Amino acid sequence: MNREELIKEAFKAMENAYAPYSNYHVGAAVLTKDGQVTWGANIENASFGGTNCAERSAIFAAYSKGYRKEDIEALAIVSDGDRVCAPCGICRQVLSELIPQDAPIYLSNGKENVDMTIRKLLPMQFGTEDVIR
Ligand code: THU
Image 1: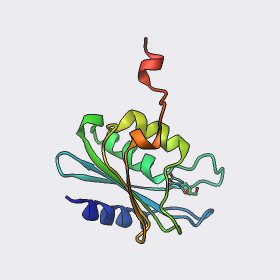
Image 2: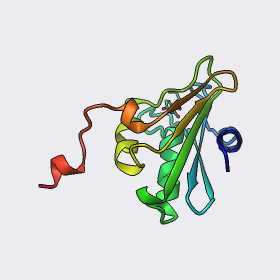
Image 3: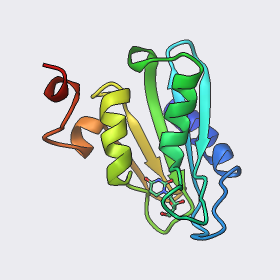
Image 4: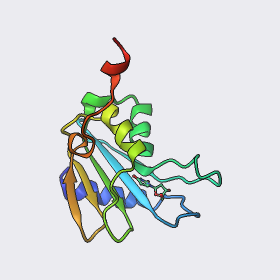
């Protein structure tokens, strides 16, 4: 599956967004090395703090199926915003532990496309090796 196809999958995932508060819809699709795709969408909550972002929904869903960091090939994150959805700080921290540092992260809003990696999105990372010594 190529970049465009994975982005399309993320747009399909975005249709499942539950965003009655922000009305900002985000979809994500994780491509694993076995060719499978796992979707995620943003799921909001009246408490606001209980909201889960699309990319965390997708990566948690992939891990819940048994996939791990080394199985992950690429991630697409799309939104219906005026600019591409740059992953929030919490998602960057989560992705820094759960996907390979140089796995492509394709950001798109259908008009603008940006290719990233978590290494570029989150410099000077706090990680496992800081905690487990
Ligand atoms: N959101 C994501 O799904 N991913 C991000 O990285 C940024 C924010 C969602 C959370 C919330 O449902 C809405 O966008 C507005 O913040």
